[in-house]
Amino acid sequence: MAGGGNGEAGDGHGRGGNGARAIVFRGVSELVLDAKGRLAIPARHRDGLAAGGDGRLVIYPLDAWEPIQARLMKLSSFDDNIRSLQRLLVGHADDVELDAAGRILVPPALRRYAGLDKRVVLVGQGQKLELWDEAKWQAQIAQTIAFPGALPPGLEGFSL
Image (cartoon, rainbow, N blue to C red):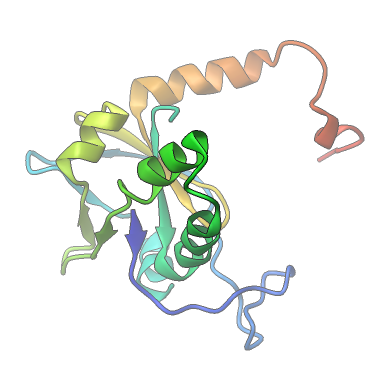
């Protein structure tokens, strides 16, 4: 899903191309889908959406999604795996609009795919938001906290 907008790419320091701060989504919000499948986007994320396979949906501002889609569609569709990925990601992408109450309609097919019923979790992930079924999110967090084995190679030496 992609929100409408026309933001600019950041410079790696939290500033957009015009020196303004780039939009960054952070935090976890436990929310409820209404009977029509609408989700009230928290106010702190609305400006980012207006301006700019594992049981979750990803919500990008339109200006962040379009380069991803363009790059994916440049890949050869003669490869079965690439074609399947194009079909899944681009074929199921859906433009959504915030209504006057700050809600988006999560399309029925995407609600079914992600197993979204009523209780959901919206997770800020920098340039995108993830939408999870609450139970799946809790299971994901439990698995992450357990963190079996060594750190992945990209995290060696990483500290907070």
